[in-house]
Image: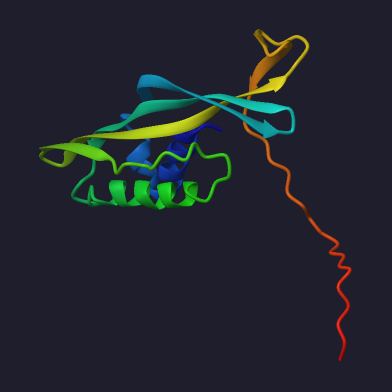
Amino acid sequence: MNKLQSLTKFLKENLPPRVCSVEFKSEIDEIQYIRAHRDLGLDQYQMMIRQSEAVISWGRFPYREIHPDYIPVLIDAWASEQDNELGDSNIEQEPPSMIVEVDDETAVIIVSISLSEPVVMKEDQNGYVPFDGKRWSLVSTQFWYAEHADVYSDVKYDN
């Protein structure tokens, strides 16, 4: 799941159901790539960092029922969780910008936020990308975590 999908899911899970069921959109507007080669281990290689401008909008946001300030606060809560994610692109997250146009009982709300994600490949004999004498395919970053560890020491303690 990419960051926009994760953020969209987070907003839908935390806002009242009707808020995201009518005239709600979540899409990417602009994409830039930054070259950032790095071996990630596990036969994975980061080629680039993808920076994109995400646009999340509501055509009829019920601003009298729920204050629009919940949107940037929820986005910030989501972004704070992303800071702990291994494999993040290490580019600091900027706060979102928001346009609100009020009309009687509802508002048009347009939120823009910059997102950064690593573009990662994994060795694959049938991959599309020839690089470093091998073939590669795009993948989501994978991490393996140790579930237990044994610690050995040659140090002897005298009591």
